[in-house]
Amino acid sequence: MIVRQAANVLEILEYFARTKKPATLAEIADHFGWPRSSTFNLLTTLSEKGYLYEPRPRAGLYPTPRWLAMARMVSEVEPLPEWTHALIAELSAETDETSSIVAPSGVMAVFIDVVESKSAIRYFATIGHRVPIHATSSGRALLLQYSPEERDALYRKIEFKQYGPSTPISIEAVEAELRKSIERGYCQSFADFSRDLAGVAMPLPIGNRRLSVVVAGPEFRIGTRIPEIAALIAKLIERHRPNAG
Image (cartoon, rainbow, N blue to C red; front, side, top):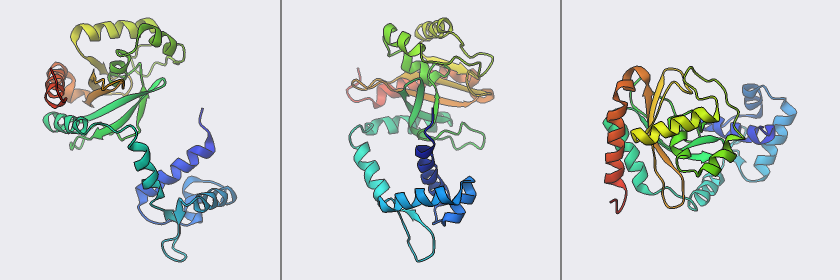
């Protein structure tokens, strides 16, 4: 369930992140197709709370640095170790594919750090991108870190959909895929969620945090390289993780 007013605030912030310039009430209302009155109320509230201001008279509104200050304070509580970004940066450079650090978010897996491939045809992923935890290699690498009881409780909340021909659409199918992942030493997906997309992932627990690292790209390009990429992931985790071994 999405709370529309909360979503509207986030959409405004994403709008400014894309446009990188001030915008008037009319421009924002027209862009989203929102009524002028509700747009006015929302922008006025954000302005009065110190999150929007007018850089120049009649030039429109723009976010204040308060967003950044708040984000920094939040991120300082649960920061990712610096070595995890170095890990995915090297993975992306070595494979020329998009590499990410992923964390659980209920029945979804959320991307919390991303290094995109520089290839024209690539997996487009951004920080905050969410995918079903059971239907992706990155999500299943998270599920491997759950106890059977925790997985059972989570499965009861999942709406099993047929995203692609190979999507696991039952608890039994997900559990069977997890057993295969343990046997082969990594999780993989071939268009399980996104058409023509392949991925390979491994658990990356840090302290009591459940994380995974994933490399994903077009199936035609990395499908036959999955075992090779999995071996590279394991090698680079060993190289970058402090006090590994």
